[in-house]
Image 1 (tube, rainbow over the protein chains, first blue to last red):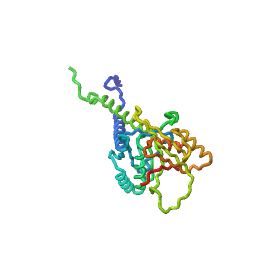
Image 2: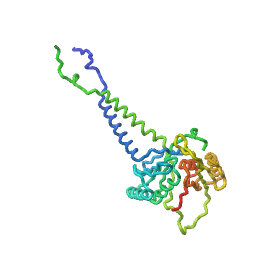
Image 3: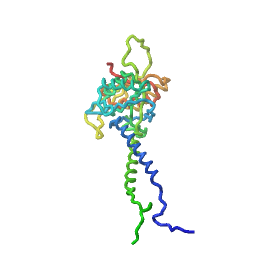
Image 4: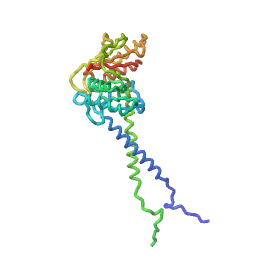
Length: 150
Length: 157
């Protein structure tokens, strides 16, 4: 019987190909999903809340409305585009028509410092489009982290 | 001289190690990035389908709780960009609670303890200049006191 001497060339190595395939798939998935999320959301300082929860919003057709603070006033931004309240109503009516009866939600991402006036404008525009779902996005705050006793 | 025959073992391969390193770095970055949004949550409510009062409709007398929020402005800004402004809370048109949202929650919980139903409307009525964060704090207090019908006052247009 012929015995083979173990050499460097014949050393056993792990098969890397499936792992690299998996890693690339995961990478593509995360790159794509993070881009979709970034299109809808603006950088805002969200208000703190102790009772907000991570709810499943995927069962609704959602429109994310950002209100960013510019010099003390709020600016309405949807999909990276500034909107006036009448334009927003039109946009929401169109979105509702496209939803074809699916339940719709407005997800509000308003800066903590914007005046209520701007939030009320968006609320009225949403009401005019006959959309009832109104979700306010907040930063979840644990009770022991409450600031300033406010 | 020893000549090597080209075989499976001696085939030229591009160096995979730096590429795998880079891919893993990217993967870890994209795995961790969405984790920031896990700190975000939602306060959910429903808006009425009609805006403003409806003419000719019989108004029923319903007991409700009213929370008024007034902004008390001061000049200047905090270092983190937050405005140096405070809020004044008036509960049910009688009790002035200052800026104490814990007192607001206590007052709401007292109402619940007195037997007020969870579906009693709680109307949050902020002034137009009141900051969004204070409105959320009031909403928070009402949710924490297990009230389910929370309404917002909006200017009539």
